Amino acid sequence: GNSVTQMEGPVTLSEEAFLTINCTYTATGYPSLFWYVQYPGEGLQLLLKATKADDKGSNKGFEATYRKETTSFHLEKGSVQVSDSAVYFCALSGSTKGTYKYIFGTGTRLKVLA
Amino acid sequence: SQTIHQWPATLVQPVGSPLSLECTVEGTSNPNLYWYRQAAGRGLQLLFYSVGIGQISSEVPQNLSASRPQDRQFILSSKKLLLSDSGFYLCAWSPPLGRYEQYFGPGTRLTVT
Image (cartoon, rainbow over all chains, first blue to last red; front, top):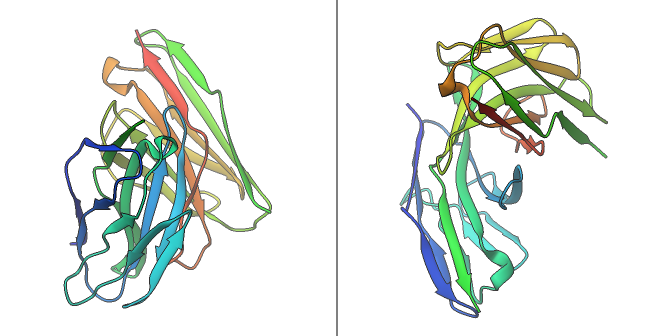
């Protein structure tokens, strides 16, 4: 079945450092891919998305490229801020027996130090 | 624009008591609706999803049930809570045709004592 694997956290960075959070997936067909962010005590917010191979999603300085050949959707940001501290979830939406299901990774906690 | 509401925001209930959590969506019709549970420091576990009024699919056997009495209303219930039911409950909606992103509510923090 479909699955999402993302790197274990926590990830601790200094402000202005480069961020990469790895995400790989297994899916049949052509899933859509997403990154969500969750701040403490809140629900998940959509950060960015990509719906087909080679698409690049971007938002608030974050980027991720849908790589079908490596089945990956790594999240990157060139310069993180303290306010980026949160938990990040990689997810896919794919068809299973005619029904679209959402599969989430286990989340990666990011802590940015001033 | 679309909005999703959940209430209550926090809830403390004794073991064996009933539960009712409510989720409503505004600004869209015939959404797919979802209930997730997130244990402390963990990922999301899909509990139920619904593609229409009265249509509920359960992903895992458990002490909970769900109902969809109206197009944009989704209710999570239990007759008798267990300690293991504690967690952060999230409702989400998506457009009906799949492949699209989900939109999450603010969540309900449930503590069973």
